[in-house]
Length: 134
Image 1: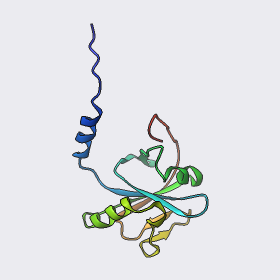
Image 2: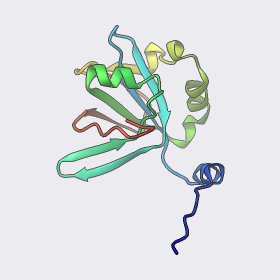
Image 3: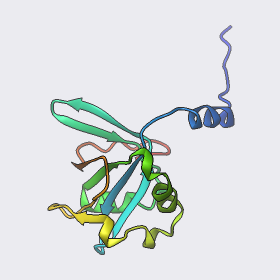
Image 4: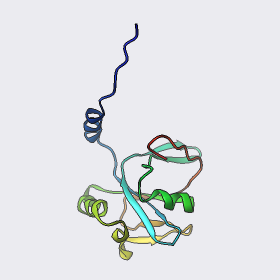
């Protein structure tokens, strides 16, 4: 007889909180033209040829409708000196996260962070919705 192991969700969350990864701000533009963005660690390179990135965004994230609308987003890689800024961005009200002097608008309309270590502007190619993420 095969034994089924039930996942222990809280233990899994605790383990992932200790998993070091890069911190990014992923940003896009809402239908009304306002910038939207969230702090994300669920970002990875998928391919060099063609250059492709993968993001896993929660279906309830304030950013998702903006990405669905525009079809574009930016990935802005934060440095270790961005800890205070990152915390402020992550905890600020969604409408007050963007300060004009910290951001510039890319030709495709998405906000790009001026002080990021690097920024990538991406076009949505193949959304793959799952139970919790898009």
